[in-house]
Image 1 (cartoon, rainbow, N blue to C red):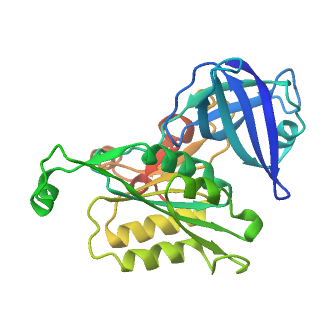
Image 2 (cartoon, rainbow, N blue to C red; image 1 turned 90 degrees about the vertical axis):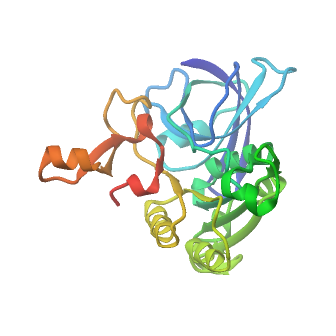
Length: 293
């Protein structure tokens, strides 16, 4: 746990905030999170978990790094953060958990975000914009390139919300060279309907799905739908789940996620096919096939 200073607070739409903190050296995987609460505050007593949007190195500032989180007003914890001013201090623990896994052979990332689920996928898009993939195996024969050849990854983002106010960080995604598709349930911007409609329509146009991976974060129902689409098209899919966390590192056992048992576990149990993992310690990013939806 470290105490850090609030650098700035920016409000987006009625209930969304981008908050920046000065910090000591901090590196993270997209999908990891931090536990944050105002220093000295006892109501609420426990910190809240927030996905890391980005970490920037700024040598001219105290601490040398800037940690950014993007959140929606949900309760006492987020409201307490939204009242802080530059120079106020917060208790920050992290980064915590396991983020998205990016294999070297990934060529195209399909990012799916709903509402406040957008920070992890923005972080992933920005990381992918700085990296390359390696052509190997069967790809080598098809492209007539050596296995050591490199290429820039393609990123396609599908962002959804109930209204236009819930569609977030489009500029950040486009700066990361992602091709962005938008859906709103009320039709106020982009496609009228669900963001998973856009994902499914896109996949139907793909003649080859080699090198594709879906990365998603958002409401549980959206993630379940994304997992079903990924299974139907036989595309690897990773989902970042949300759960109530009190500690962030597995001590409180408060963020239990039902997962499917392995064959070995099923034989040992003889009955149940459901097991459990902790969202904070084992996730929050999971292989979608592992979750017992």
